[in-house]
Length: 472
Image (cartoon, rainbow, N blue to C red; front, side):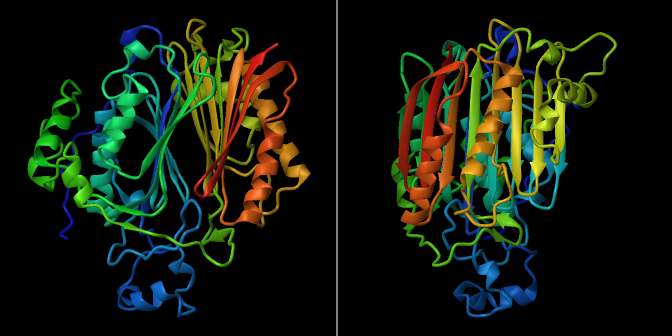
């Protein structure tokens, strides 16, 4: 397939734009989308020699390439490597991401990078780009799911990724659901939208539906092939960005898109094919510096203590933006959560705060809406609390360190209630038993709070626990 070069729009405003401000109270709870593409990219750029010896790479029969035949996926499944593409998602240029994010209705404020991941601080939350996966988290009235066709197209045309290994979409219940636009007006509408692209998805509503429930959509693991969007759909998405001064009407030229109609499920499903991935016989903790053991902790906190929110307001004679963000980090103690991290934090005017932090191939992200009528903060991390030599290294000391981290976060924000979600991957029954013991221990007692829910799920390749607490 010939690679398509998508025309670049002009740069967005450097300060970003808050598209939700006009609606009054800000919707803090984020929509979170994570897509893992397969085949995974090579750990190093593809050379002509590597392309000529692909058979040896994929069969794991040559020691020179044996490590590179193991792609990094959520449960370390081994999938054939792509052929002939040296690009990965990190090589996608910023103007292309600008175009995609314009459809979501947010902009890029700043970027920090290391050899593993690029972290984009957005006007409304964050985006993390790895070689073969992307995590996009947006709040307010952003239209996150409308990014899917553009992300798929970018992954295909820029990197040669023609299938998805796994997709996750989740969010907490909205504070102001009536203000959400299509396709986020209800969970049912979101599921229908996702089902229009993926035939192997499952949806869950977790927690008390009269309180602060949590929603999850995920696809089963395996290679899911997709087609990129049709010309008419590209034009429609571009039209929806009208009024964004930096994006021209031909930001994505009509002739840059393949013919595909995502609303035609019959056509979509006929073009999909599924392959069973298989787990490796040996557990590995890193492949060229990337962890193959995947875990994510998320703490979602509404009804924050107004006194604890004072640092998150812009002050007179104080620079906002990155400099103001550093003041917030120091004053609140957020800089002590991961002192070794490369931190990118931002203070908004008149209030509000966002932060990304990187430690090797792990990240954490924090977003704060301090206004008392809609106060909310979120904390998410994929960084192991202590260095891990093997996935089985889950001692009581490590669990206690996770509990301490959660306590640190709670003490900073002092929420009236909070929700913990904790995903951790497994590749066999032994590791799953270890995971279960750890998860149950983490969602335990926290002083000053009453636990209302503790719900444990066993997903394919993942263990998950949900806990909800209210202040005593």
